[in-house]
Image 1 (cartoon, helix red, strand yellow):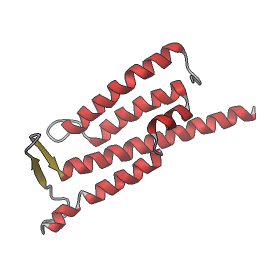
Image 2 (spheres, one colour):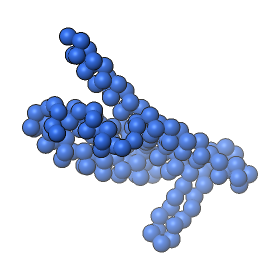
Image 3 (cartoon, helix red, strand yellow):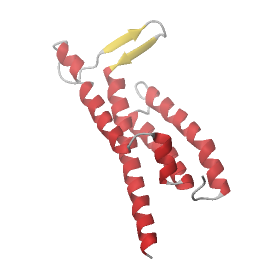
Image 4 (cartoon, one colour):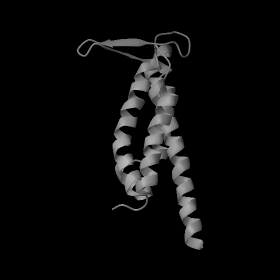
Length: 145
């Protein structure tokens, strides 16, 4: 059910959200060798979800996400802390990067990648929490008038 927004906004939101999520994934994975990383990737993803929120409303966004944005913040913080532990287990200084090669798909996993995914989730969850709270407040003020 289309709740708010124009036809152009609704179509744009449906087309741009997948593209923004793919671009945010690209920025997240590229951030280790070149500019990019978890922060800017989280902002790009949050922008896509915000556009969807403005087009379809809070309920539609909640139905699509299936998880509270505050839960994303918690999982992101947990991943950020967890990324520091492998260095301790190897007797190395705190935040020393650890790398693992996954030969089947020729991919190098690392603690910096885990940390960046944590930052991504914290930024995404924080921005979505703020935006949904503002939309909720705006709707409550409209209902009072």
